[in-house]
Length: 475
Image 1: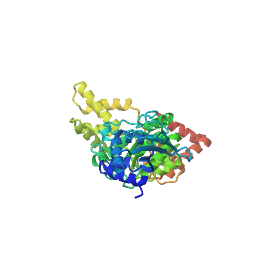
Image 2 (image 1 turned 135 degrees about the vertical axis):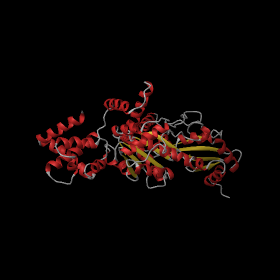
Image 3 (image 1 turned 90 degrees about the vertical axis):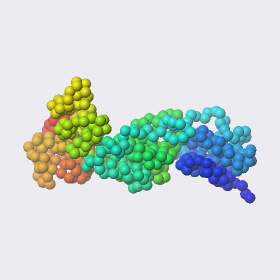
Image 4 (image 1 turned 30 degrees about the vertical axis):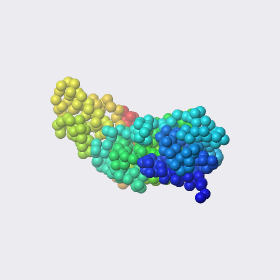
């Protein structure tokens, strides 16, 4: 019988597969290729030093037993590390390292000694309980679907998120991009998906990180010359969640490395979940090839919660904290804090704290005092509704006229100014702005912004409109 490297490795794999978990086998052994068999020395190809170090740390005994059962008691193993050069050089970087579980490898089989120059484990995250071979998910356990209340403002995003959690990588929502303004629940929803996946599929590797942390790790990997290990680490994740993807803007190196990671995950049926403060169409300084991939799946917007949803959020918060509060007070808070969920919960916490510290009953009068101070001391996030009110008041027309289909010049210009300032002062997408200002599309909003810019530079009366409204909205 002709004994080849492939036949020996196939027998080893059969033994290994019977002795470890399926997910571990798929992650750490399926990517390995047999390279050469010579004098009972089997050379196997692995994709990075990170990969080699992990095998040596966790599976060296298993590898040794498998090899000795298949070949002989004197069988030895050599790792051939072959990393593709992602900087355009067609020649991959390779080196050979003997397994610590197969000593006395002849010098010609290794370009480095196993005890020299072997770097530390390149996992950029903590790996608790190394024996469990699990990567810490970095998820916030408080951000679950149970306390992410559904309303008109988030129904699409929440339901799509639940579909992703039920079948990660197996829906058309890949990638799943959640976008919206500050404090509307993007991070909460992204974490909720991750938590649900972990509950339903404990064997899957889920990782939450921010775009800022990802960038810092990438820069560090370049400094330490282990960029390929960094890439490989992210390529073994089953569900990758990256928060605030707009942070990649203007960072071509980070975008390039994420592009390769994204492609690998997507092609291998892994799930990618992203959050951003704006829709892909509104992202600046992001490469077109990345933007096109963001659009492969589903982009779902989180909007400002309506009154009924704000009531539900407050009641849920009070229930979880074991606090009773009069419905009149709850409704007053919900009517007066409209900007986002974070400020809504912050207001109710301030009210409870004041009542507790001063040993006062939570009344509508106390609520009015606290909310007045809270609103005054909190940086106001200008809403599209507020902008429409200021613009319509300035031009002495009602909001219905501003939003109407009429083509009268002065009304069209007022509407264009409202769209211009909505883009300037809010983080809403062009589509969302158009939808809220007369049910227009994003192209109309884009045209309006260009028209305002052009008229501002050619018409001094129109420029005065822009300056006056800018001052009113900046107060």
